[in-house]
Length: 495
Image (tube, rainbow, N blue to C red; front, top):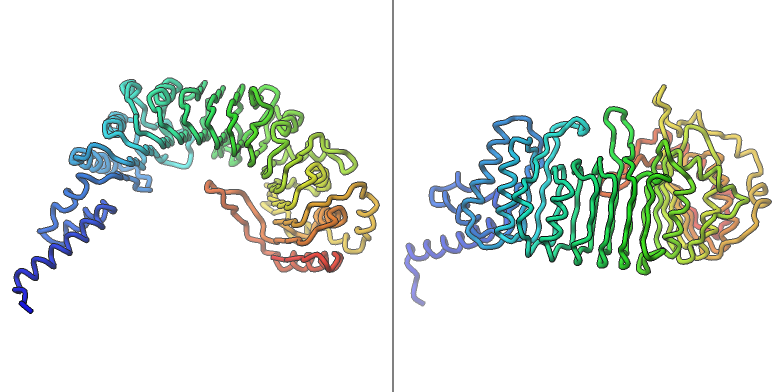
């Protein structure tokens, strides 16, 4: 076997090393730039890498008030775009806190994306501080961008970018293949019309504070998310922004999520169809408002009588109104004939109220198989004391004959409910009454989950956040006491 000269062997090995480095750096541009300090031979390797890179992601994930840092970021993005030679790109992501004086730079990047026929455009401009109500630094779209044509654009996400109604109308008109559109914190939007994107499948509109009307005409839309609430850092509470009207035509809608306040002055209307025939999942975040009308809330349910999965997040005033309207002896005004899974998050008031109205909702869904209830306890602001503190728990219920009292109120059985989950169990009398009532009406009940963790709220990713429960062991002891009163054929799990 002929030996390979040492020099040629080193060259071949070096070529292999360069090949693998180029492959890796093709994926990670930031790491490519860092290799310039390793070897003189690699100094321009990152330049060659980004020339044809399909994904240009400039997401620093940080917030900086330093003008030098902003200028450095802008220069870096401009340099990459100047070096890029490919005719198309798959993705352009801008993620940084850019003040309004850099609007021209951002607009040039948008024009670059259109020229390169981008498929995914993500403009996420972070805020400088927590008080977003006072921050009006957002970059603005130029009128020149309205004439851009987005032939390959399929995904568009804009957060804290000051686009207005005309900008969105032009974007939809010039994006024939757009499938996903997300608008967050776009405070220049007033009367939004989504009607020119016939291929649109997913639409998300979140916290556009001054939006007054929304009209959606999207025959192929499958996922719609509307959120009109925002955290007021001045008051420390979540507050809704009221729209005058929300008009929806989406006959192929599968998933609908809404979070906000619905009043007689702010109706939510599905046109031409009482309910989209394919709608299977609905999530309603029902918020407090000075003009909250419980009739409007309950009227919403008429659109969703055939859904299979329903999630309800109710704030304090909504809960109190529901308690007043739907007593245990009353019938819920609407029926859910196909509902199989019901999840509820309830903000508990600073006094113990009856939870038995939940049973009227269960009885309105004859095929419901699983029920999950999450109780979020409010703080007593004066002492910052939480409702699940040990001294606030009514322990006298253990001496009462609650099962017999519950049994005397049973007027209707449920033949489908199999699993009940109660998160935030603290041992209150109203919780005991609710669980025992469900045990009595659900003749096929198989499992009860009592979770003593105390939920606070959902984060942006939909993950439930929990508070510390310093009395977890006491709550588990009450759960064990309740378990002893439940028939042994039912599996009671205490978490």
